[in-house]
Length: 379
Image 1 (tube, one colour):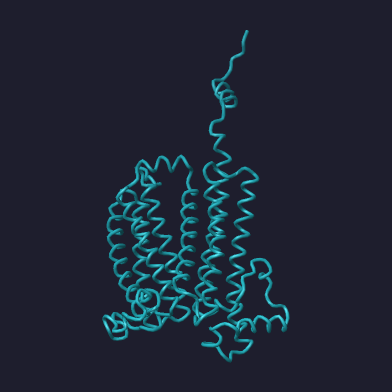
Image 2: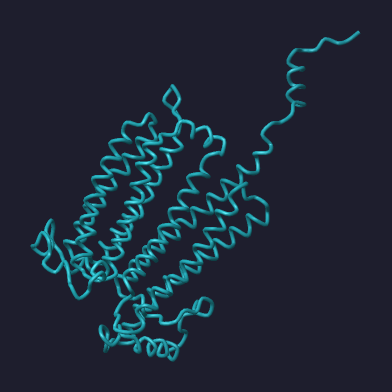
């Protein structure tokens, strides 16, 4: 005669023997979190790199190291004789002859350490990327479809090092006392491309793949296209800002809303320069940067107003922060130029561009992959 069993015993047995679903997703989810954390470390290092690069430019330190030695250059001068050798090399370039002639060895050490630190950060970023990529790849923890993206980041980082030297080499001969502005813009532009890709990948990895696929069904295409246009416009303005920094145009024409008391500077076009006015004429370069800033603000206000009408709360908040930062960046730019772009304000303005660019990317991501809000008002 069979013994009576509680109904709960059957349920418990079934629960113990039922197949466990979702096991195939367990490792990818763990890898996504770990890879995202690694990308956030890279993101922070690239932000620091951009800031140090800006300080290097504003202190005219970028030409203090006249050779590109990716491996042996990691060691700074270790003796007084080593310092003298580096100083003698610097005294052979036009910047010393035309700008810093007569500077002391201690003065040279100041600009040398800025450039050396900038290059060391580049090496550190390369090592962090290589260690992370090799580790995730060797352990098989890279999710499907992500190996090429992560490898691409490393390739762009290597290209950035080569472009950095291409930039520095432009100021080592002829009559150049600083690097070519268009090469500086290329170098900074690629830094923002790398930063933007890292940020976008981090946004992607912050949510499960299934969640992203479901969210895309509720995407707002018009808002996504609008934010994409804003992203490209902001990137162009960043390049224009690099041209301004490259020729110190922010220190030549101060005041606002006029430029040195003129609405349109008389020196806005130099016939002898021709097309080079767009890269070498401080009046024209700063004028274009200002006008682009006003247009970007108008574009941003339109995007913000459209974002406020989104059906998704997180998207509305993202566009709100983007609009607030855009306004703050414009005000900071005005304050910077009024004070002739001192080091502190110049760096703040550059870091403001980083924050704004990432906030635009965040708003764009949520326009494409909105976070669905429940009926109770909780995500």
